[in-house]
Every structure is written in structure tokens, then in C-alpha cells.
Amino acid sequence: MVEYLQRKLARSCRIGFRGFVRDGPGVLPHGRGTSDSANWGRFLAMNSHGRVTNSHTNSMPAISSDLDPNPVVIFWEVTRACALKCEHCHAKAQPKRHPLELDTAESLHVMDQFAEFDTPPIVVLSGGDPFMRRDIFEIAEYGIKKGLTISLSPSATALVTHDRLKRLVDIGVRRVSFSLDGANAATHDAFRGFPGTFDRTLAAFEAANDVGLSFQVNTTITRSTKPALPDIAEVVKQSGAVIWDLFFLVPTGRGLDLELMTADEHDEVYSWIMANQREWSFRAKTT
Image 1: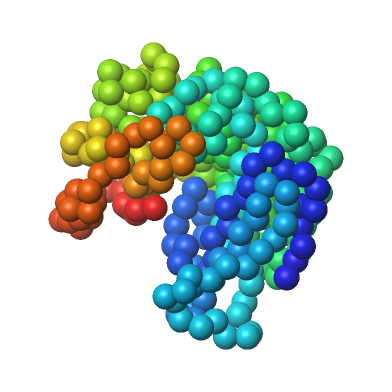
Image 2: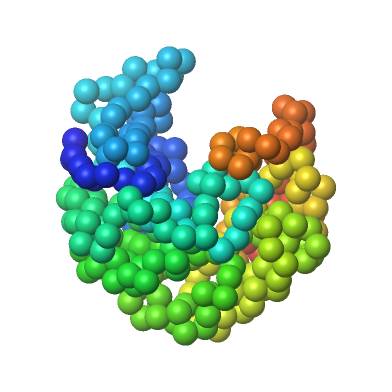
């Protein structure tokens, strides 16, 4: 097992393994994402101190000793800084960067260690808002040069500009993701904590299309956003997105204050997606 991130981390990396990761903000290289039934019960967890541990769920099947340990997708929260104050934010993002976040040299070293896996993983740079780091282009480009597939998940703020998205294309970023949690400004802006974020999101869609940058739309499903899903689907359809990723609320961070849906309500969402996905011009997936 590759040992990495041996120094302090302000936030953890979430790592998905081959066999239960199918799609995401990154683009799966040829041959990735195949199903290995023996692998689905194992995952690599990294805590905030950078220690790597292996975990198993009691109800899952035994793992063979020759398990391929290479991650398919790594979600790296590169900063806690973000100009928004979203209701569900698991990171409890804040206006300024955390003092214990990795600096540029340390971040490049993390990329070096990601590149040590036998098969280069997809690395999704998230946060907070990755655009809150002035060195984010340097970090992303370095990872690409190391043979990694790099994607970003920026917040819909004034930092998402045509020029910045074009620069991502120029350095080789494969995909970005934008969040949409309402079909109009009133509902989306309330969820994201600031007025104007809905219009900025639509502008980000347009800019990404203009520069030829592939993007997906992420929607958090809560009791308050569930009724708007059909209308949000129409916005996604018009956006030009290749994937609509519907995230069921995980009650951590600020999300602890939100009311969870019942099991029946979750089933209703799954049934609705199954009944409509063939009519959509984009792929739909749940997380």
C-alpha cells in the first residue's frame, strides 16, 4: 500500500475504489471502472493526520489477499475557504483558508505520491472552493504532467470566469462540476447562502460550453430540494452538462441541521430517476 500524505492535512481525502465507482467529475480512462465483486466491500480511508487505514463493513464479503489497491477516484479537499455558506456543507467552509492547509510544495508532493499508484487515478480538486487557492492551476497542471486525470469542483462565485475555465482547458483539465440545488434564483440562492449564485451558475454553464470544457451538474437531495427535481432536470437539460449527479444528503458539517428524508422518500427519488433517465440527454447517477 502506498503511504502518502504523511504530513498534516487540514481535511481528508475521500478515495473510491474500482468496483463501486462508475462516474464522477473525472473522466474514466479506458478500461477503468470495471466491476470486481471481491473489491466492493473495501475502501481506503485517510484521516486528517494523513494516516492510511483499511476498513471493512461487517456485512460485506471477505476480501481476497490479492486485492488490487489502486483507487479509481480521489476527492481531495484542497482548502476550506469558500465565499458561499451552503446549508449542507460537510466541510463547514469558511471565508479564509485554514492555516494548516498544505502549501504549494507539500501539495505537489501529494501529487507525486498519487502518481505512484500502478494505475494513475482521477483526482478531483474540491474544497471549499479550489479557486480560493492562488496556486490551484500550478497544482492541477503538475498533477496532469505526472499522468493523473485532474478535475475541479469550483463554487459559483466571481472567481469562475471565462478566462479561468479556458486556462483549465489549456493545461489539460478534463472536467469540472457545478452545483445546482434549485430551478430558480430564489430556491438555489437560499440553499447556497448568497444571492446571485443561481445566475453565476448559469453563466458558468455558458462559459464552460464556450471554451469546450466538459462539465457535470451536482444536486444535493434534501427534503427541501426534492420537490424541485423535475424542474432542476429541465435546467440541467438546457445546460449542456454530460452528467447529472444527485447527491443524497449526508448529515455532516452544516448538513446536521437539515431534516433528513424518510426511506420512502428516498425510494420515491430512485423510482423517479429510473422512470425518467432514458428521456434525458445527459447521464444521471446518484451518490
